[in-house]
Image (spheres, rainbow, N blue to C red):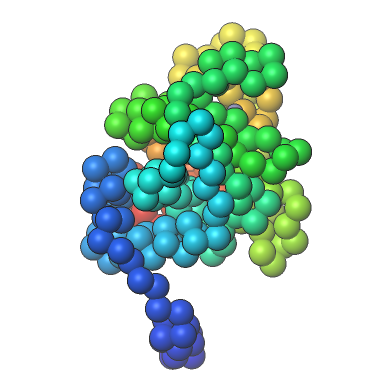
Length: 244
Ligand SMILES: [Zn+2]
């Protein structure tokens, strides 16, 4: 009763205006969103508006960031954190969008990256779209880079406002390390080799695979799959109500 009461008060204090352009973008690109119930869709759109209002989107080498870019990129953040209490990024608010793949330092043809020192996320817009338009290849640069940002920012947060539960993170790490070692030893047949580089890449690859190849992930690596599900407090294989 109390929580209902406070819930109602919170809603009335913070009404969120959801513009009409939001839903068509989500329906067009985001298969996770399309699978949600009407109630969860509403909650998702509301979170997109709240989170995107605090992000700083900057165009690089083109005139203006579009609403479509803002909604689609923010949707990756909301998708990963949909089962969690906290869903707003503080440390990596700056998101730089570039019009094509790019070179950075000694890296060539990048789709995106997170700069931990400059505290920004860089994303190539064509790759963002492709990541969503092909929803089942476990290649989604926006999920990948935002997963990096969340994992890094989580290290600086105290328990009360952390994204991830400490124990669930430790349980995921135990399973993640096992898989990383298998990849390094060439003894595996599922999940991108990229996850074998280190535990940061393992985390982002787990997130991409969890959302884009969930059924196969669950069938072939159930312990790792359910460690991710517990960490994110959601299981999209449950259909329209993924939040546990
Ligand atoms: Zn990465």
